[in-house]
Image (cartoon, rainbow, N blue to C red; front, side, top):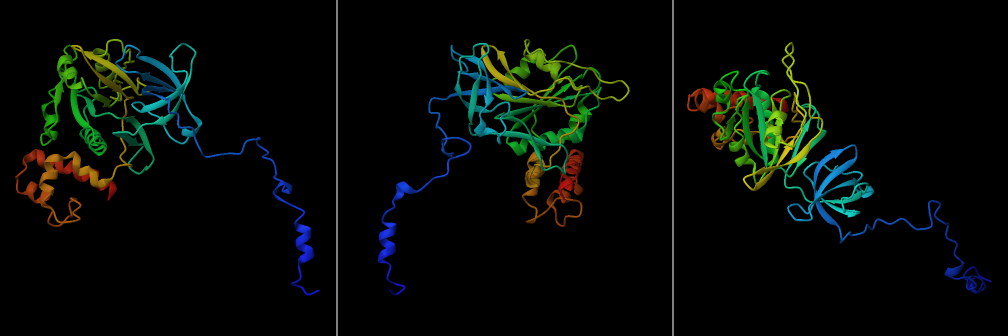
Length: 346
């Protein structure tokens, strides 16, 4: 028989079919793994008020008669995604809010804004502070502790980078005149509130907060938590004091939490954050920094392509305008702040 004569072999293989194939069983279970996840079409949507050791306080049916706060955990499919205060999330499981119940967060809705910071300017790892805020209230003290221009500049950069509108509240104005400090920001269109220790402008601030979700940021010891407690009487945020030796405030608020503000029948959300002594911008695109200096950004439209706005930048329209005195002394200060921040990324 020639090597191409295979009739006998064909007859031998015809004795087998697919039923004779042995499949090795799955050692980890009887059901095969699948990447298909349930759609959770019946999930309820809620708003994350706060996070505490892996448990999330979520407000469901905000503004409705059935409004309730529930406790939830993050589903396993979200283990690689962070859920932060301000997130809109979808929940399944027991969403009754009864004591001892636990729901599951299965989806994070699209975020409109995301406020972030890094440990320092060289750290590209971002720390998410809050999601979906549309305003930032920067709280600073006129004295005790002394206000820091550079820190406020960094808050502004982070706010503009996130698409959040900044506001400023200067506390303890009975201890020092805030005018010299505020002159550093004369070129920016910033709403400013002046607050005395014994007379806080609560009505004026509340008017700007209703209808918004406003994240409060500030150096430790500036009176941020005191202001939050005055605006939201049942907030019970811990307050501290300033060390008379170092001039530094003591960290009191240890977590970020959303608190409902009620004012003349209208509501808003105050998002209180822990006090910080530094605000790294390692996550920020340097091209967005100029956006925090709207007065200089208008002048920069006449800069040559690729201008860095640093001291050695040829034909920089901002530098030329400052040297010509067209922007006044405040413009010189603003340019210095801009260049200091830009130099961090150079």
